[in-house]
Length: 173
Image 1 (cartoon, rainbow, N blue to C red):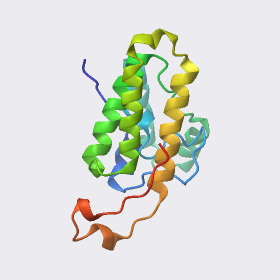
Image 2 (image 1 turned 90 degrees about the horizontal axis):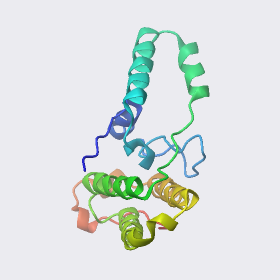
Image 3 (image 1 turned 90 degrees about the vertical axis):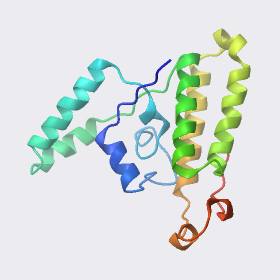
Image 4 (image 1 turned 120 degrees about the vertical axis):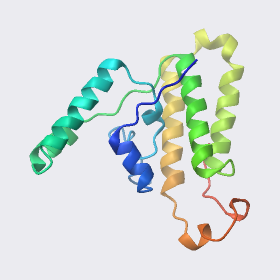
């Protein structure tokens, strides 16, 4: 099964600028900012067309701040997956994405992989898992990512050392 990711401009900018989270506390309205699990969910054709139209409007009104402010006020994050297969696929893509960016040494990825393994063992009872249960898993991962990536590392820690010597921020997963 293919998993296409529609990269929105804000997500790519967050990666490029290394703005991984807004703050150490996540809220419903900030759940999709930075390096969020929700940014890797597949999008429908209608949603992609709407995002493209929004980007054209933003580009056309770049000098006008009222349009940008109005759209920011209206923005609400996407809801997490409510089906087992979609959740399992999203967690796998997110795990691979985190591994690609930060190596497998990060504690957030280790905790995420534990959750993925536990979820895969529930494959036989997936019909019993409620939408709220899957949403709670998503929220726990987003909350942990926010806490994990808001911890600061000094640039001296990253430059000139191998990833095996780095002391990564802790994770609650």
